[in-house]
Image (cartoon, rainbow, N blue to C red; front, side, top):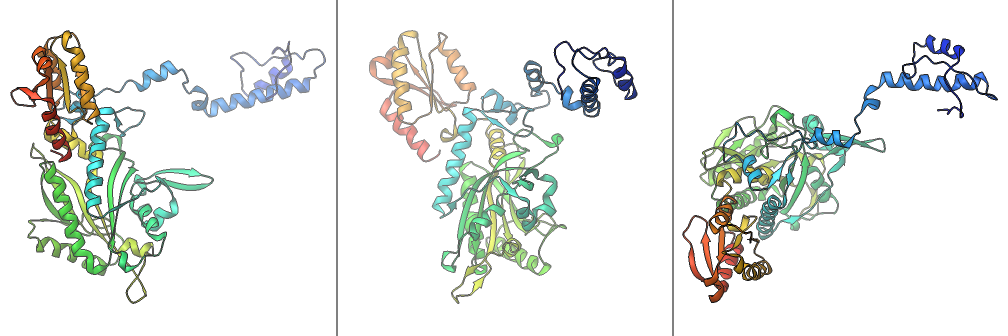
Length: 484
């Protein structure tokens, strides 16, 4: 846009007539102009035509110009969201998350959790447990990109069956999807090198972050989110290995849920209306899963029409302390995806063969599992999973220095420990620690200081006096190591 020289003011009747023909007013005043000495009327016309253009643009696209940019006003807008607890029960994971300082939500990222330090500790411990158990079961672990070309989702069938749930973006005139599933990326890893029958079964896990578009009205804390971590695993195997692999996965899932004191029932979910693959393939896949369930004498339910679009599945529905059931783990048998991605392995006959694929998750969504676990336990987590495992309390101000030395010793031993050395009564400090659901509370008074011992209050039990520091450390380290 041209800029008028110094001294230029809107005073020309000629340009006013021109502006009026466009029904435009500039800054709520008529467009009048007088050319300063040495400037022609052409300059004035060009200048005001560009002003007219800008004003027409303003009227056509008001959101571009009117957009709020004041940081204080914007901060007030994004700070309006507040958890409405009026209709929530005391053990609701959203209330527990707030009281225990585990996580929060913000309207700046609908359906996406902000983990605080203590909440992230729980998340990381669950991830570590998953990794340890899958490593024992001979799983590899991979990581694949979150943003993948539209072509990949067309090949997998997700574009046709799942497009409305995929976040889309563009890069250099190419259309991409933010992954709602991990499996297509995992198949590209499989295809990256030739495979032999000697490498099968190949068990591959991925703790992948996925995003799925959800209507805002169905979002519910950690139970229904937009962004979450899916603990996927994919097993590539020969058809004759399928039943033994499914049994191995079921044993793994059973061990997981026993660790958390969760019971479950199984359901066989069969072909949905929207699916890929022939009826012949679906008949075979459903029969294999049915045979496995019956060989284990599983008291399963039939769930017609609820299979994945690429194959039937066995779903695991856990029951919490309130009698509610949650579908978390699943095993899905898939003949279709290996066909679509042209996955192969070289057989004993030196010919190419098509592997069969099993999709499985144990937690399902790690975030959702945390929500279930918090409500199941009312926030009273086992020692290994507790964000703070020990709280050390000074009886009086005289005991603070000794309490701090013990605190350092515990931290050096890898125990998640906090201290409470404020000038308050011991009863108040103990009550605060109990409200924080901390497994062990240790009080250091004069007697403990003199004898180099601890007064230990285990959660829900009477205090023990005269406990030796080394004995307590050995006990709690064993609990943590064995994940008790």
